[in-house]
Image (cartoon, rainbow, N blue to C red):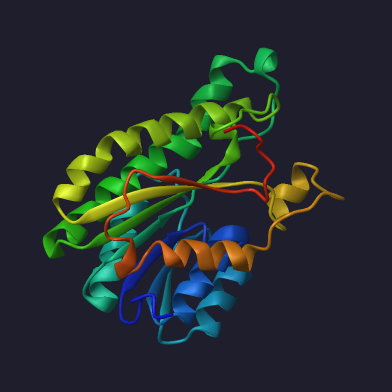
Length: 237
């Protein structure tokens, strides 16, 4: 199946590891040009080398408010356009609700909520100019079923999804869709840090392929929607 990604330009944050890397690799394999954004690392350099001519990197920390516009500028200067943005921000540290203080919630929003909002603001402009854009927010099942030890993630990611969903109609008027993927445990370093050893987990390459499927022509009528990728972990309706 042709996803309609050939020649498209995608910006992926958190692209050096885990689900972000798997998504960047899939998009490149499907014919998209990729702007891979992450902190400097050997893994980020290896990603660019593996897709030479099709992938450029932007090194930086999403805590830097200037990074989103710098990444968009890189897409426009290297490839002349921007069609896709995969918004992947780091997860806050695990802590139980009654142990979390105001400073913990402030840090969670600084790392997870605000960088994503800044990125969406930055990418919507070049997308709207061409009346075509796909924004996919990488989120967590904690939005749908909060886990006590992930209360910071649940709070900041739920706020992000509420904001993004409320922005969906205005974006759609300009030809830009915005959707979310709520990821359960996958075979990533983050999941291992959270103690999922011995459980059934998803494959990052499958995750990447699903996200890529949301970035092509056939998803033009899907916006403001969230998708669970959790192997049936959540049992609620």
